[in-house]
Length: 249
Image: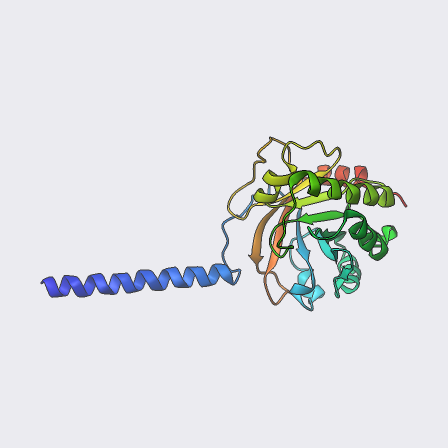
């Protein structure tokens, strides 16, 4: 009897480990996620993409319920995403509202980075306001003090705002928001927050505009994983946001 109980326990342990492994694998491959935001509450959905998504089948992607795409244009002071122009044109061809984003590095000046972005992104084609990607992952190893980072960030914001006519959106994680942005008076800057576990609440009570709720999702037309986002409002509010944030031609 004891032997039988022991064998049963071993089998159940093995099954549990297998189920955990299968769940983890499915999560890592983008087939399950933590967040499934209400489509009624958050009807405006979008993606953010770069060369990491590879060649996208835009006809297939058109079948998905997405309305906008933020597309990586630049990084640091001299790097351009190799698929930016291609992704930009194809996204607009299938009717997505498009915006370009810049990965802000800790080891280049705000002025150099602004010049890189402005020389790459034609303001005549922009619909969504420019976005700044501020995160630790993939960034320079030396992290500046808050005042130093904010000083360079404000240079970037000022130059981009002058070039495109509107304040940019800033993409942040909970860590970068708490370390650099929380409590700062960055007038007109819209917040795009990443939280893959639950609906976000910003530490200083500020309202967020975009929420990246998944970073390893699957969509038709994209072979690998992709980030999913929602706008904080309905279609009417999204149109107002686009109107208020419209780029001056």
